Image (cartoon, rainbow, N blue to C red; front, top):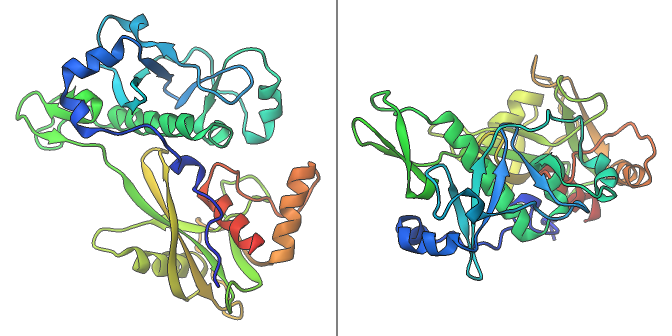
Amino acid sequence: MTFQLDAVPVLSRSTVERAEGLRDDVARQTELWQEGRVLLVDPYGRTLIGAGGTRLGHRPAKTFGSEPPAEALLLGEEGGAGYWAVGVDAEVPPARLDWRSWQDIESSAEERWLDLRGAGTFLDATAAGLFTTAVALTNWHARARFCANCGSPVERVKAGWATQCTSCGREEYPRTDPAVICLVHDGPGDGTRVLLARQPIWPKGRYSVLAGFVEAGESLEACVAREIAEEVGVDVTDVRYLGSQPWPFPRSLMLGFAALGDPDQPLRLQDGEIEEAHWVTRDEVRAAFAAEADGTDHWLGVPGPTSIARMMLDSWANA
């Protein structure tokens, strides 16, 4: 039996209902707004995380007026409560903080501005889904201010889930860029080795599975084969789907796969894209996870827990 993901990817968790009909129901939106909650999202994609580090710092919707303002983005409804996101200016500059610094956040008695990469894995399903959707929508609106047809300014409609051109009337909807991410192992079954690589811009020692964007007119399976061949020169077979996770940086959807590769095939690293690549044993991957948990050094730095790459690698290591 081949390995599968051990759980739902962190940023794929969500409990809030995305009711499309609600986006055109202004009366219902106004009703929900009275007891609604608002996430503040700054230009760095951060929101306020409450004391203790596990909940979002919502604000009462009525703080922003008696009805949803034009800039409010409807995230959804749950249990009769409505949730929105509103963009705000940055109150403090970004700190050099990632998930490894979370212990400091958990002990803090104050709210802090944190991004999705660092905070996502520590939030519950409702909060993680709300934060992910809020970042995705705010990123799209920041990059979709003008009509793709005539270049005129656009205005938000459908509670932020579309824009309409002020000149030609063309409607546009949020865009998502599909990207494949693939764990290549040596087989048979799940194999005993995995192919990991690192980009030049990553911190020294950080490795991950391989990924790349889907091109126009390309299937997901073809993209997996092309990207791995381009990046490390390995031909893969037995491509199979594992799961997906939104990755709104700025607007990707990561589609996870596993595939079989031959460790005896010479590695040819793509110049400027891949700095190092290695076949790593399952025992080494497990040792890297153990060292991370203990706070000790290990030559292999694994992906952070918010990413689907981490879940893929963890699921394979535990298989």
